[in-house]
Image 1: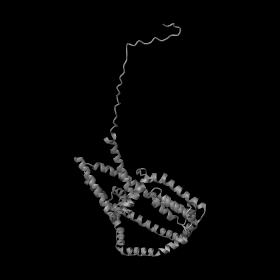
Image 2 (image 1 turned 90 degrees about the vertical axis):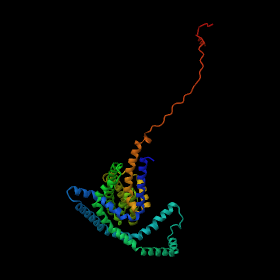
Image 3 (image 1 turned 180 degrees about the vertical axis):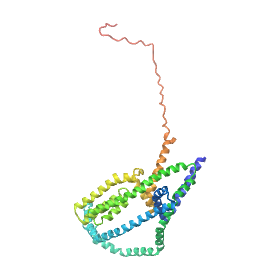
Image 4 (image 1 turned 60 degrees about the horizontal axis):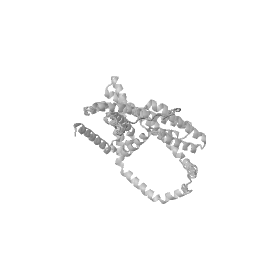
Length: 385
């Protein structure tokens, strides 16, 4: 085994061990991942304050205070709004159930030619009563597990307290940690890793900071637009649509369907349905032609199918932590794939020309009799021999 091959196998083994450890520790990495994201978001502002002559500790304290005030202020504004919206939803829930039973389900039954007993409410209630015993046992088991999971609640509260503490120390020592990691890299790959890290930082900066602004702008637009249309739970629908907009078309589809149902139940006319359609159409145009090009840009280059796959794969492998980190990780993978493709195009495997086969030679034997006298052509008017 050559030295170059041995070095590659060592690097591959180190990468495999790191990935395995992350997968193994995924259940406890949530507060550290959230804290690292907050530190990453606040590091550019801390660096800017530091360049103005301020010490790192003071700069980090100011940035951390600003982030904390933004988070607390957002919670103080959103919690009462969300509580009011859920109370409104609970008050209107019987109307939604009645609309589904008297309008939506019969329409589906007629279009799909289903049996009349499929959506029979009396039959459904009877079925629920038949299985009420098993449901009660399941609920009792769930309550017992919840009552025994007090330690889980304590761990959740501990993580909630741990996030700001870890975020502060990560933000304070961010540049030191990056420099230390750079010194630990093998000297042969250090320039390449640093260059790829800078490209990844540009992609992550464009995604994380830009996508958060896009989500906020869409949530506000949909919430205000639906409220102006008279939808009582418009702010709640707009908030959900904005939060889910990081997956292409997911926030639009869920918000649009929910707003249509709310308009049909609340008003039952085509005017409000058209108004809802106009709000979401304008929102899609605003997202595609204004917000994403200006705030996110085209540096990520992820296809919508790749985004959906990344979110599902991250959720399957690492749970909510995977969903949280799926798109940032996918954007880094895009940078790495660009590097791999560039190296591939420079390799002998790609540059080697196709082998051209020589044309097959065919030997043909031709006998030519040079003693043959050519026949004399017949000329009209000539008596000939």
